[in-house]
Image 1 (spheres, one colour):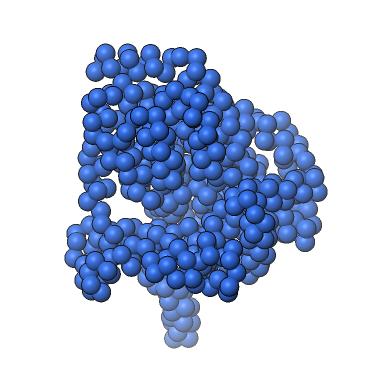
Image 2: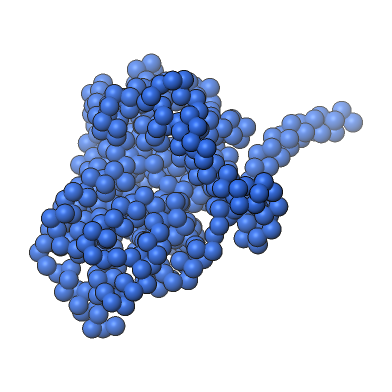
Length: 503
């Protein structure tokens, strides 16, 4: 093992790998901090570059860029309430509320610090728990994936600050949007109205950019500018992070565990990890009433979770060639292209290369702290700029990013349409994050449900017969009934109180 470790150090100590990691880290930070440009897009755009790199340097660019981009999405979320990546959407409101309270340093510092810790925890899981975790993931059938995806959808009701009924309504609207197109089990065009551009469905990224970024610009146009934040020098980014670590050590650990488990499940990834962790943080918090007002607890758990899922998503990828998420799917293609074919033999025949990947993940998450602080300080000047100067730039980024997704004007139209939808929803108290979650998770729910029904010949009993499926079913149904029970309790309690008073 020591010999293998020395060989791994030798592989990553070349100038090519060092320069590739540094350049990819800066690139990932920039792409991740631009609304509409996701970590998946940042990774995909690097693939042509890997053609000209050695195998280790090629993997280094994927590792560094994906880790940095997931964290960097927190920056515009905290400063402008516009999440840079879908994984940041779960807690963008919370981070922005902290900024309005004058705690931007604490919010952004928690993002970079707990993202780095979560990333390292994910690497340790990749090193130590790869075989058992991969075995658990392989034991999941479509029945378990259906309940897992449904449970992810129910997180919309747990994190909603408004009425849970409105959160469910927003989620159903997102599910309706996810039905558009021909990417369904039957391959039948749905809700396309003869428009060719709708055949491919609605991509989550344009919808996310529209409801968060464009809607925010519309609100800025129609409302007076809020009181400016105090003009002060941006303080220490890392101040107070060790205190937060000690205070919320259990939340951080729980976020790491959730991220590792969700990351290893194919098709889940950082987006679901962030949503589930933030919902769990609010559900089990001693101060749930503070969530949504600028409370750092949810940021600690969700920030640790989404980065932990990045490394753990490589577990099934390296062992079986099954991608844990879209980033891992891109990485598999690069591995095959460079002769590092995924499989159990990869750990025996090319063990030094595997250890090199482990080390690159650790280095990327350590380097994330100084580079992330530098990026935060640069981005912090946004707070000093007048809103009239910032909003046109945001609209330009939204238009360019949405056009780049499909290389056509339909993406721009989609962003504009969802901007209007997002504005109307928020004006009436409907959480747009619930709709985005429905769009992201809708396809997975439908695919798993239809495939399971085909397997069971139309019977629903297998959805509850398997032990893990039964546990997930109980959790999902409980989460579904919870807002209804809360609503009933709120209606019944005043009646009981009034009756007791009259007596």
